[in-house]
Image (cartoon, rainbow, N blue to C red):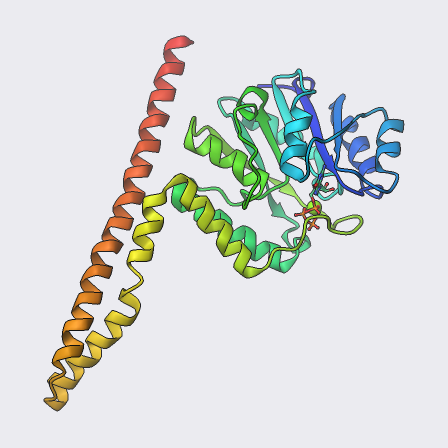
Length: 301
Ligand SMILES: Nc1nc2c(ncn2[C@@H]2O[C@H](COP(=O)(O)OP(=O)(O)OP(=O)(O)O)[C@@H](O)[C@H]2O)c(=O)[nH]1
Ligand SMILES: [Mg+2]
């Protein structure tokens, strides 16, 4: 089991003067001595406060939280990294529980199961959609892939692309682990009310859906294609039912509508089956990868 001495905390910040000091103090109190604050160009006293508290302060390359995590990683020399937001929403005292769970895993997510009411409603909905999509795609049973507090093996985090386009860096890291070693798990953590104003633009419903589709497109494009192919079922089924009803109860025959709806239903139905098959094939691939990973590990230990 790794200890807090094996961990470097990477804290992305953008104008977090109200939270960053508390975050650093709390990390220290929980045994984390190495703290890298990766700043995205704060205009308040964030960097000043972080330096005065003895954290290492670096300026991120590029823009956005994903590149901040990537930058921070360059300053990590320990085997584990704890990524944690700088707004004092995540309670660092749960690190102990995360470390206890870490043996045999590449990533331990701090799932926000305690204090859920502190997650804004739209975010909660977005997290739910993304997490459900994630679980369907990867055959996992996670409850919060969007959490901003997660413990990852440094060498695994170095393999991540950090594209950051579309879905968030948290999801990108989790997807990498879930699609390769699959050694991902979660531990419930407490989520508090945010200090200071939100920095990430609020996502709206359409964007959330788009992110879910992007995620699916990257990891299982065929499922997206066939899911689209099953859309004809939506008009096809009601038309076919109506044609059937008219014929059975009113003795009226609608030949053209019957042919059209049968076409729609058959194309849609086959596509839907293929979408399901794509999902299962992919999951089988993941399960096989998992077995192979385990076997390789057992041999080398
Ligand atoms: N370095 C860097 N940090 C960022 C950037 N955008 C956001 N952050 C930080 O990333 C963390 C998460 O951003 P938040 O604004 O709290 O987003 P959130 O947690 O999804 O939403 P809230 O409910 O408002 O807390 C915070 O510590 C931000 O300061 C960025 O572009 N660069
Ligand atoms: Mg936050």
